[in-house]
Length: 261
Image (cartoon, rainbow, N blue to C red; front, side, top):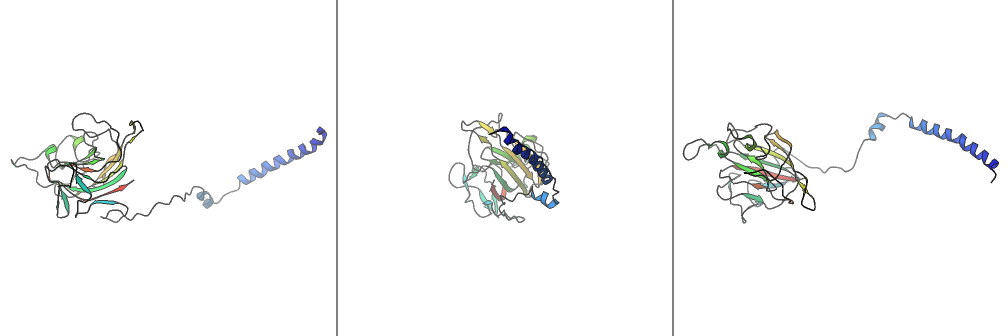
């Protein structure tokens, strides 16, 4: 084709391009109403499920682990039925019968439990029980990571072993303990550790704990399995039960429930 014949087409395109650019610019400069701008950041999916949560009642999607009547959700860590006692709607540690654990296993979870230390703070010899001997128990997440339960009301002990500590790892941000004989609450948000296919730690566990409504662990990194002696370390595992400790003291529990996250 002759170049001379192309020139009219080239000129036509050259004239149209500025017009198109001008139209685009005008379109982009159209003023939007505030409601139109607001709609641009609205996200409509997914819609959260409805969960009813009334005061003093487990959320509608929670699994009730102890309702004051039955130990059906629990078993002895040694096998067989849980040997603890139910007394006036409370689950009471029966000393020297061993820890108990849930029959079901859990990973990430929200846990609620209420506990009470006995009013008896003196031993058979009449001496006051002090430090770790003052009505001790514990909640173990995935049977490995202990949130300490202890009568820490006016009871001096090592801070990384007082009530609400990640035992021997993390000191609570506050001591929110109530007097012995008064019910106390733990509300716990737990993110389980992750391990790769070679059983190496990918991300550690984290825990947030509210003691009687007070934040005492704030997204605290768990350093590994709870150890009485020595430093904590991780071992690869999957979902695992909750465990309550028999430390030889008749600590009481009630209103235990869990939500899988």
